Amino acid sequence: MSAGSGPPAAPLSGRIAAQLAAPVDPAVGDFAAALAGAAGARAVLFYGSNLRTGSLEGVLDFYVLLPGTPEGEAAIWPTVSYHERPQGDDILRAKVATMRLATFACAAAGDLADTTIWARFVQPSALVWAADEAARAEVIAAIAAACTTAARLSAALGPESGAAEDYWRALFRATYAAEFRVEKSGRENDILGHNAAHFAGLLPLALDAGGIPPRQEGERLAPDLPDWQRRVILKWWSRRRRLGKPINLLRLIKASTTFKGAARYAAWKIERHTGMPVAVTPFRERFPLLAAPKVLWELWRHRRGA
View 1: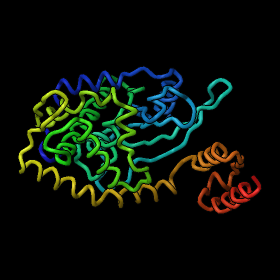
View 2: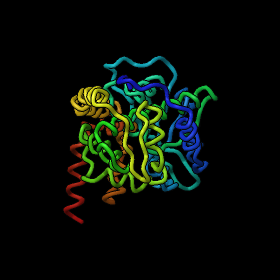
View 3: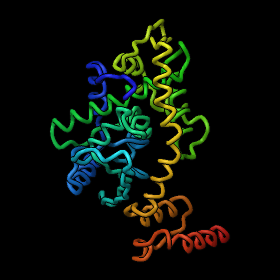
View 4: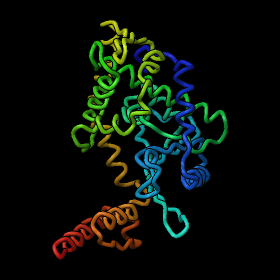
């Protein structure tokens, strides 16, 4: 974070390295390797509910991280695409976000206006493919930086003292409110409840790495955060909060025209949730937005006849 944090301390980096090495289904690793090979990637991260449950159902979530220098502040990333891969008699499906590893690292450290990277990757993820040990080390450092960025803001937004969950709740409430999203109220409780083992003990390590060592009394923490430092962090956050929704809206607009495989993804989602099969014609594949009104009309008729 540009508001005064240094590089993540060794205890935090060690914990992150262990968490990123969490075992996954071999099919996930094979899918990641195929995506990496096609994109010429440096690394691939796996995250989301399928990481937590171990299920291959639904849509797998990957971040494919590319080589190259960071994109400029004005760049709209990541690029989103949908992929399918045969798995025996079944088909694995994945939504893939692609961006440069260098940009990912800058965003994780809080150096860009983006909030999504550090808020997303303070939550669990697995490094399921890396080109080499140097790439692995870069990803570990980036995820540790994301934890540090998130922890520093949680200390500025949270109470003077409290349980670790109080600070994480304050953080996630603020970041969800800053983004152009439609998450249900109380989403922060779901994150903490589903990932209790991941968050247990994480905050003190991340605060210490971020230069805000907390005093601990049992389960309660009291971050050592002077008023001047809190003001610096909140000023840093104020700009990102104001820009959060506009940046997310620009990404949605970009995705509406660049989401590779959008028609197949939408067809699968519609059939999964409504039972109505949708034919993916060449026109619908090439022009999903133009095809959408007819698909919606068919869906309306399907529901009327149900």
